Image (cartoon, rainbow, N blue to C red; front, side, top):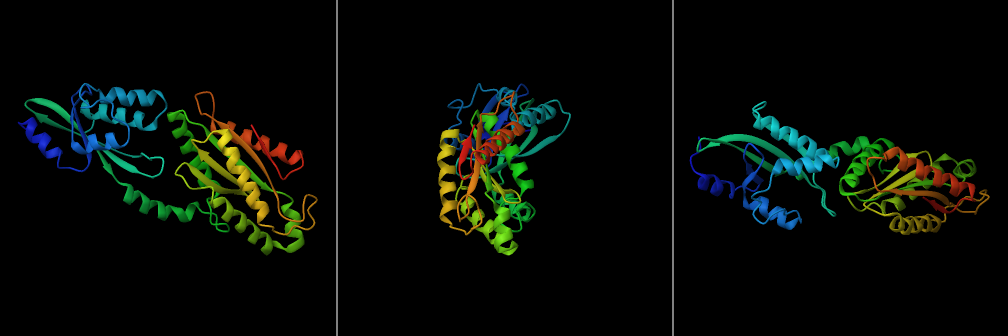
Length: 304
């Protein structure tokens, strides 16, 4: 049994993990310096001292919005409070707008002055997760173009959809189809066609700069770009630049009915995820827009 709150507080303030102590109702009794500093630097201070804040209530609020972290965290904390399990561990992403970050949440109980209390710690495990990502990268990269493959695109889109749902932010998706690519292959050979796909992929990489963005090979001569937290108007500006840069490659396609150089058609769509929408709706909207771009003459962008 620990007998002194002051001893606990002084000990926790020396630890770099972000730590809070709660009672069996979920009320925060105190937080350490690292917790307070992280909240201050990330615009997530709920209260100056964090006292009179119920951590379980905050998790429940997040859970009600579909936040996976809120659901798992609330369940895990309650299981420790009810003594259904001795401790709870949970890894989760917590990305900032310009940095990928991951944390490990730990919940354990202790007794002080005859009362049961619970320590919630959040340890930064970004370095380890980034190393793991490098290992996973080989299974997620398209072997020809060296950008994300279809499998990883599907995983990423699901994850980014949940993030944008939680934050009520838009997500934009662009499907890119290279016009008359079969004619290019038939005219110059498949090796030239492969070099063309690599060149287009290199252009797409310029539009994949933030944690919420990804460019991927969708299949054959089709590519895709996801822009998380990006409204339609902003995405239109990006794909207009992309379409222009593909044209500037001046890759020969002399038998194309469009132009003697490579062009592309792009279907763009954006949705603010909510309980009535799903990932497949966004893909269908982009696919319908792509169909319209091709129907209207190709070498253009259509959006919805």
